[in-house]
Amino acid sequence: MIEIEDIPLLDDPIMIAAFEGWNDAGEVATSTVAHLIEVWDADLVAAIDPAEYYDFQVNRPRVVGGPESRQIEWPTTRVYLARDTPLDRDVLLVHGIEPSFRWMQFVQELLSLAVESDISLLITLGGLLADVPHRRPMPVSVTAEHPDMQQRYDVEPSEYEGPVGIVGVLTDTANRTGISSLSVWAAVPHYAATAPSPKATLAMVVKLEELLDTVVDRGELPDESAAWERGVDELAAADEEIAEYIEALERAQATTDLPEASGDAIAREFEKYLRRRDEGGPGPRP
Image (tube, rainbow, N blue to C red; front, side, top):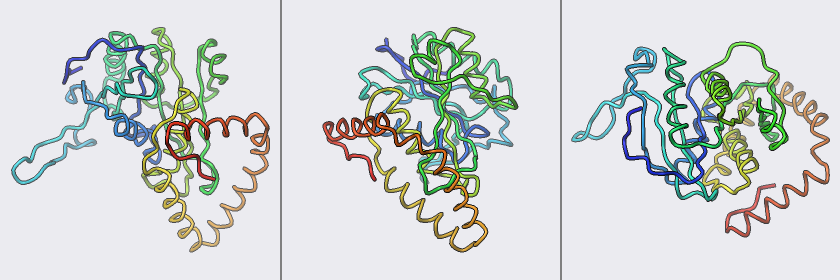
């Protein structure tokens, strides 16, 4: 790791990581981390040497800046430190790009930083394309491999088998290293996969609120989510087959979502509303 700023002794820190590329449908994972960096006013503290891990013909450097301050910005994975958070603990936010080479070495660099910083929890974020309707709440799933984490957060182990991205390798290696981890994935409608997907990002933020027992400033996400939904509605209205397909998805999800109308679920939502109101933020939208 290239240390940009001195990393101080941290207060019971956690790490939240997301990577552009295969794991990031609709840019939902990296958009979530970018949102947290913004609302928690996080500072850049470290970065990975890009020459070790990236094919610059795949992830090209970019020229940025004005006429008098133009410079080359290299694609890499950066680590930000958020100290002023509603969690009353420090958070390291990893905003990265899936590497082209040396995945295990890349993961070891990140986890070495996690160990040196005494990270107590790693949360990895991902986005996947799925058969979900855009007008309904975006599904977000959480898995954990360690039995203690499963019991603590009331989640199940992943049953997925198949190809994995850097998120899967990072999570697996963290578990083998003894770092507690959660894997959080948001589903993005495959017929509306053009990035960004603010409704899925908002759903991810809400799930993080639930997992971390906190309230996160949602900023412009609710308005952007509503605008995104209207835009997809307009596109779907112009294609009769897509409109019929969306209606079929909605009917199917309505059947599977019936258990969510339980008294416990309603009570949880009302409790979140009261907490957000007490902290001066807007309540959840209907």
